[in-house]
Amino acid sequence: MSPTQQGPDPAQSDGPHAGVVPRVAGRPIPPHRLGRLREPEHGGFQPQVWQESLARDGYLLLRSVLDPAAVRRARLDVLEQLADAGEIADPVEQGIVSGRSLRAERYPDLGAFWRAVCELPRLRALSHGAGLAGVMGGLLGQPVVPFDFLWLRAITEGRATPLHFDHVYMNRGSSRVCTAWIPLGDVPVEAGPLAVVEGSHRYTDLIERYRGVDVDRHAMPGSFPEDALAFVESRDTRLLTTDFRAGDVLVFGMFTLHGSLDNQWGGGRVRLSCDARWQPLDDARDDRWFGDPPAAHHGQGYGGLNGARPLGAAHRDR
Ligand SMILES: O=C(O)CCC(=O)C(=O)O
Image 1: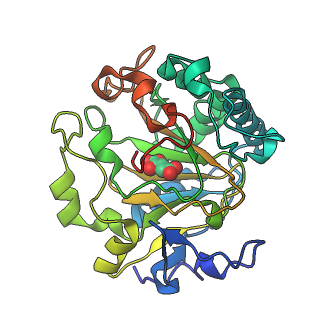
Image 2: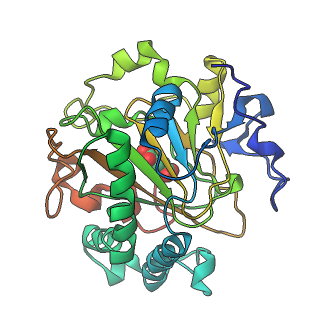
């Protein structure tokens, strides 16, 4: 695939923050290392087109596939929980961190708190509801089931998610798991959205090296040692992202390398998103991610997730 196939780079966006140079690990991304995710050619329910796009690109960008108003309501529900933990300032809908946290004293069981946030009904209606079930069923071409576990992310200013394949975190069941990354609200490039490495789903050398690696059994980090910018430079490729809007979903497979850009939204605004995983209903299941509650890594449940830590205390990893 030609590295210039997918249009101008997001740094050239003429949005309200067009002057913000996208960064990874604090380093500005040169324009030739950044491109836009391919835009869908057709709207509506197009399972065959979706399947072809996913196979060709390693990802599938779906615009306005969820109800934007429902996404904004779910975002507000999450922010209200964080505000209740003292972490989000008024007015809550702006999503500005307060710089303090009462989470640990108000909610001594941090895992239970984070589970309750991840199980907010209006959030679940998006990540596990009929709308996404229809999309994922169409894409996978058969009845599907979502993982019970939901990865909710509140990324504060200056932070990012490092580069990784999802495979190493969830490969004990189906080999046909897909991630649906759901921005909770508009997530423009300066907010540090998810970015995929162009063409990485065809990096057979890396895919074979990581296939079967299990972060829990092999006690190894899932994320790559180098940051996403260093990686795309070493492979002479690009990071692809876009200005996401409420209602968009980005779907990708377990061997598409991805991470996020730095959140440079400014003013202390937090970037919210969640990742839901879906697979064929009848395939084997990775039992870490199913159950009530799911055991997750080393039986830690939601308490093992970075998001369970008070906002601002999270380290630079998944
Ligand atoms: O939202 C993010 O920062 C990262 C999400 C991610 O890595 C994933 O969906 O696997």
